[in-house]
Length: 513
Image (tube, rainbow, N blue to C red; front, side, top):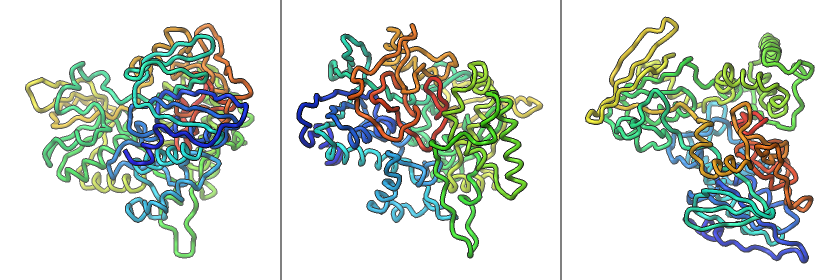
């Protein structure tokens, strides 16, 4: 732990405003959403707030996504699109210059000069900013990091009691659930004991597990999204003779960025600035008058893409116009339309929304051309992992003709993505809230039911109102939930994190990560 992080544990800063009562806020979870909320509250509140963040990791801000230290695990968007406070859009760039990040990581620059930072560096920026803001907090506010796990929540007389594993019961008037995503886990057809097998990697975010094989190992990557791209990049760097097969049901993979991001500009043309997601943008005109229907919206989007491409543009601009306003569009859809999207179209949205870092995409495609990596549209049917064997046998069904294929592998890596159901079942705090009826699973099955201000909606329809009322601390520029399951709004505005790089909603009636 560095000096900034140590000081943050018990930071007591500035003098409280006379007569203003200290408000207590507990944030359960300490990833990006917790960091952006804490920073904005500490910067803007006009009443003193005592914030307690319950997070088992050593720092606040890194979370699951930005804890990786692998040098080839990069952000999937340019530097300019990432921030902790929308009011300070250049804050990350200034930190990178001060820390000489671009000098220490020259490979982060793509052909057009846009930086794709290592995810671990962004996590360091988040934790640094939280620590710094704790020392500079307004109105006598404080920030305390409790390295622990919350296991249950109760509420009596408008005071929340959060029971932790090691630190007893913590109390506050304001509660934010920002537990984020669970660690990846194995799903069918992996057998129940598969996580114990030395050749099966259940959590691909543990890169050291990938190195426990010979250089000429045969590796099977199950899933073909951004996590798979991370894993393949690591294997190509560390095990150059490894034979890699990547499978997914449809054979899709993350799309490339727009040409002005990927391609080197001509000598007489200046490098284009990345288009930073603008969540304040109006709904695009080609959708504004359409009836809320997935079919109608898709038809309108395809028509607009065709028009733009005929004029010499790319599909990225029309798609991004939808991406930036999806938080406004999603609540307009009836539940059956939302469920239809999640079942039929989400995977296609994801491969266009979550684009490949330029350098990783180049590395993998180069290896693919040499035959070292192959991508297959295949369904995994069975995994045979005998306890006494070092190998794993996988049965799969390949292609449109459903050819059966059975092969042995030295390493099988699970990259099937996040499981919204396990986010509830594996999290004792969420289970506690649901069992008490304080939180209810949204009827579309994706997340939890919340109001426009991220206030939890109970099983009986009761909204968990903010007892602080108009004196609650206010965050600026937050327009929608993003990145957290929020039970109680800690703000009269939306207090969940604004993820500029992630626009698929997981919470209730919004569409994001």
